[in-house]
Length: 245
Image 1 (cartoon, one colour):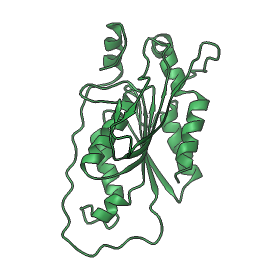
Image 2 (tube, one colour):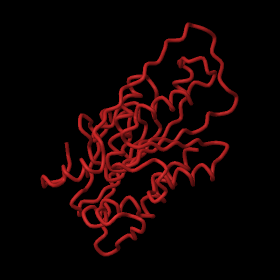
Image 3 (cartoon, helix red, strand yellow):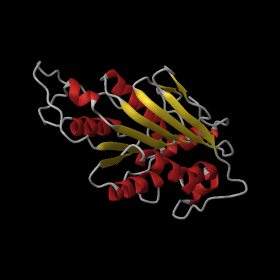
Image 4 (cartoon, one colour):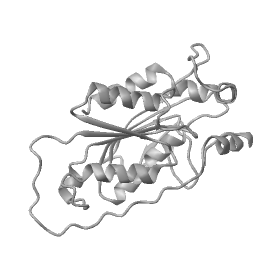
C-alpha cells in the first residue's frame, strides 16, 4: 500500500477512514429475449467518492460540490451520486439500479453495453474509484472515464492498474505533503484504455485556501487537501465530464 514514508501516516489514515471493503453485488441472469434500446442516449452516470471519513453531503469538499454543480448544469442528461469511500456496496447497488432501465431486477447485455459511467474520487476515494471500476469489469460493464485526485491506496486494493473496461483514465497528484498521492497510473491493457495523463501539482508558491477544514487537516494534510480544493484541478475534471455528457 502506498501511503506515507513515516509510520505516522498510518495513524493519520486510520483516523481519517475506516478500512471497510465492499462486496460485489450479484447480477441475476436475464432469460434470452428480444431487447430494445431507448431512442434517446442514456444519461451519463457520474459517481464520486469522498476521501477520509468525510460524509458524502459535506459541501466543504469539492467532490460533493462538483457533483451538485454538474447536476444543476446538466439536469436532463446527467445523474450524479456521491458516496463515502467506505460505502462502495451502496454505490454499486445504486449504479446497478440506474442501469436497470426496465426495472426487472436483471441487467441485460444491452443495458450493460450501453452504460455511460464516469467515476471519480480523492485520496482513499480515488482508490475506491478504481476498485469499483474493477468490480464493473467483472460484470462486463464499461466505464467511460475514471478520475483520481491524489490517490492513496486502500488496504487490499490496487489504485495503480486501470482495468480494461475503462476507456479513459486520468490522475492528478502532489508530492510535497506528508500525505501525498500516487504519481502514476497505468493501463492493464493499453489497447483498450487510454491514460490521459498523470498531472503533477505544486502549492509552494500558490497555496490554496482551506476555509472550513479542521486544524488537524490544515496542519498535517495541507497539500493533500490543497489539491482537493484546487479550482484548476476541478475545472479540468468538470470539463472532462462535460465533454462526455
